[in-house]
Image 1 (spheres, rainbow, N blue to C red):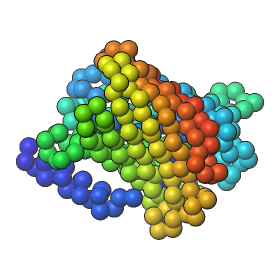
Image 2 (cartoon, rainbow, N blue to C red):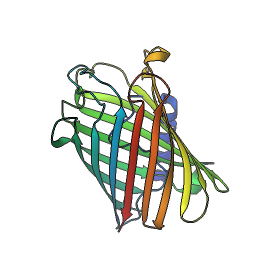
Image 3 (spheres, helix red, strand yellow):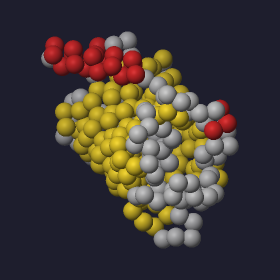
Length: 256
């Protein structure tokens, strides 16, 4: 246990030292919370997103995002009390085209015990294998630290995400920074209201001009049908002209 604690804290310090992106993921629009799936249980999350206003022309062979519909299935298994792993099936429908496979992903994640730090901490790593028409790189990697604090009914989650292409057009570029944050308030046992933020500022070695950076806010809510079934809804607004400027998102989670 002492060795695990040492390794966990060392990982946290390493991430903190390197911290600070890629573009916001249009298939899984979510700020991660600290908790992992309980040991021996499954969590099936279905993400359904629609981009009403977005990119209107092909860029580096990637299809326009405007009027795209994304349906992603995420299945997570709790391996231990502190570790989970997930697989994703990513699908999409472009304007005027039939639905098609957009890629798949693999995501292991661990968390530290709650009493080790002044805040709750978990760390997610994700390998993505996207379809070329939806992403200019064929293999991507994401490192997502998750920091959480609660203040009564108020909960704050921070996701200072680092992204890197492992194979593709930008594989030689440095890590990108994609910060995400969520401020949630528990109204009652059925309803939580929230404000989420997602950003993308470019490679750490070359921060893009402010007009080319992506910044979005998503007012939304979580409807808790039961402790194991939660529906998230939200509407996203772009604060700059870069990226998608109007997005509707839903996420249905079911732990079983």
